[in-house]
Image (cartoon, rainbow, N blue to C red; front, side, top):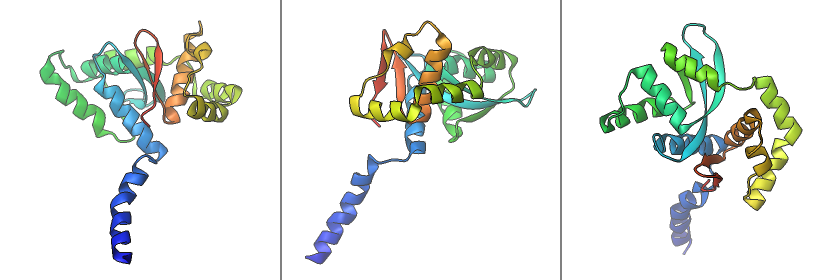
Length: 183
């Protein structure tokens, strides 16, 4: 009987622990979810860290799946044909830490336009809204703070999405904002 219990436990352990992934696992799944939506009418947001090859400056930026679609097209001089999707996917999944180096001037210019706030401003915003409390409430209520998402200040909206992504949540936008609660 003890052996049967051991086999059952051995079989169930991976299933039980599957839903209890680390924060890094959740972020990676959300990164993949955004990549899977490139070129779609649904924007799934992601955070990447990138280095401008020419200036050596490193930034973390929150951007949509369609933003990264066009940036990768510029960086690797890709077209918009279905044949280019596997290469684009391979490029974006190569870096498990979401760190990229961009050389192409068009790509770096697009990225720089997406930087709406500094790391210090993001840290201050997270303190002001008490991001840990927000995460706990979000886990319980499953409802986004629409005042922060539909705020007239796009910087605030992007800092909120950025903060949620770094806490393992996937935010998307179609006609309205939503939260993917698979994680």
